Length: 398
Image (cartoon, rainbow, N blue to C red; front, side, top):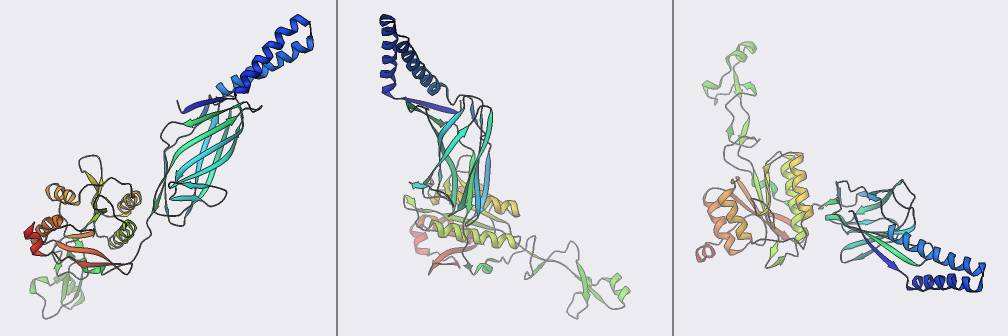
């Protein structure tokens, strides 16, 4: 059952029906066809009104297709609602739609209450008719916007009551608005100095599995790097060139908590984290996200495994868009402890948010293991990436 129905009848209707019944009886005593017709007409109106209110909406179907659209702030989109009516015609109805205020209509009248947008539209549909209602909107701020509620108010033709239909199923329409990025300074400082498998122009290590070309021989080149076939072809000694590689990969640890609530700098954290993800994506550097928002499953927090590519970036942006001030959190120390026990360590760790003394004790172990540690800081509304400094006395005291 898609709809919950509430029928509201005017009390005057009962009085009118009783009056019609009295006129009908009185017409037999005074033998008046006029009074008989008036009473019969009143009873017909009252009965028809009751029947209409109780049966209207039966056969009204809403196409609850799962849709998730993604937007950047300022983009335009629309909610598309499709209805099929297989029951009585619905005339002069009023459709109310409630959705989250991450998107707002860019035309028409609407109201916002408790971060929910309320839009009302006229609604009429004939029998066996299919209609489509569109609500254009503009993405106003980062967040997840869902259609939370659909209500249809249907008045009777004669005004003796209303029928209210409330859609009871979860509505599968969502609009994700990605965060607006802010520049993060010193992003290039995260480069690793260890051997690995990722190409790098600045690495000291080379992939010796196969040369990528040759160049003219230099006196400082090793004798075993000479490519004899190329040297014979060019009649000049040629040296093999190998691709330079290093270890790459970064984990973004984001602490959105501030005590027992969500930090007031949530938008700063989401915007700067998105910028760092774009940086890694452009340079094909694998990246991962750990955010202390509670999650169901094996990993008790929001976690995106190490990866790269366009789809991987989209998954991270989806997670950033869904974080809000009502997100359930877990202690940041619990996140770090679980990660250390169960998940692979990347060569670079970037911390964002409040860093607690309890977290420093576990972070120090990664530092001892050779992991590069960086911290995202805010300075004059700008984001700055700096090497993480851990006070040893705090760690020892813990």
